[in-house]
Length: 130
Image: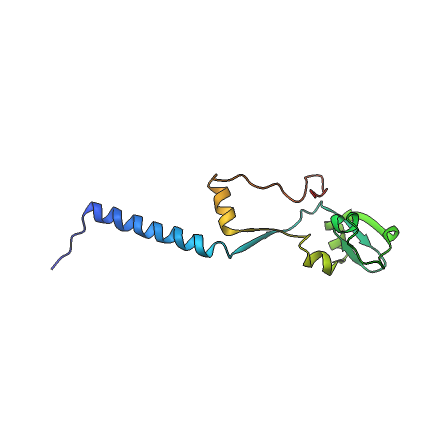
C-alpha cells in the first residue's frame, strides 16, 4: 500500500504549515522583547563623587532626586563611563532611559518593509532624541 500525494495537496500542506508558523509568530512575537543599548558615543552625565552616570533627559528634565547637585555632573560618553567602571543610576535604568525596546513582531515588520523603522533614541553624534 503506497500513498501518493498530489501536487495540489503538497501546496495546500505547505501553505497550511506556513500560515500556522505566521500565526504562531504573531501570537508569540508580541511577547518577545528586543532591547537596543545606547551607542558608545551617547552622552551621559556622570557624578565623580558617587561613580554613577545619568541619562540627559533625566537630568535636563529635572526628574532627579532633590539631593543631587547638578554642578557636580560632567558630560562624557557612555563608553568612557563604563571604562571607568561607573554604574548607571538605578532610577534611569528602571525608567528605561538606557534601552530602546521593540517586539519581535515590530522587528519582523520592519525587516519585511511593511513599516518604517522608528527613529533611534540616540543620534550619531551621541546626543539624545527626547
